[in-house]
Image (cartoon, rainbow, N blue to C red; front, side, top):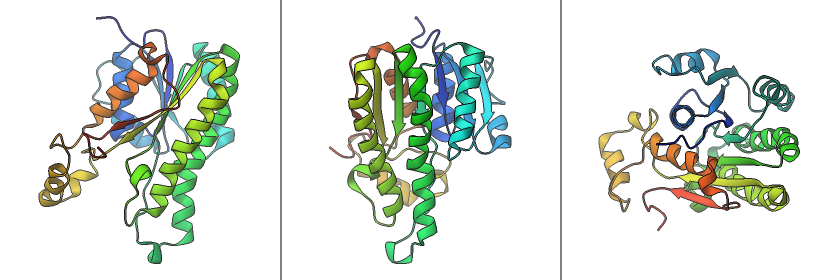
Length: 247
């Protein structure tokens, strides 16, 4: 089977765990050269210790809120690899609380990391994409950004903002063959959900039409599709990877 991302160069943010880790690994399997970033350098280096074929994977410590640092990283990638085809905006955090108990700092910090960082990275990379007249932007949102969730007003606002941002960018950059799409995962079973009780997890599963939680690989496969030429006529869309949760 041919590699869907052969000869392509990708940046994946928040790659030390969960969805970012799975996406970076799948991109490598599909033939891409991958620059994976995370704010936690030790966790990033440890995350890929058990992956046998990581030669095409370049690990970089990078804070997604640092736009100047992103300009430097993109220059490094272009100098080192000669091209840049894909950006996966995956980095994100949660600071959950009811609105009446939520501090302004917690609201601002979630928007800075989850939403402002998407602006920073997209703004920094667009010049390279415009010059080469192609590129795929993949932004990770959430079903929470579509339907909201009690106790997550800051997270929901950030993820809803990503959707509006991506659609606007798709309209601005489409004429240069630059595509901008969103993936909205549902209940994905990761290290974070493993801390929940089995009763709570089963409650989530039972409310999903496919009767199971998703896996990071499910999201990674959607990223491969949007990064590859299979989706060359798709832009401005939100792909729900949620087992039918919002059906």
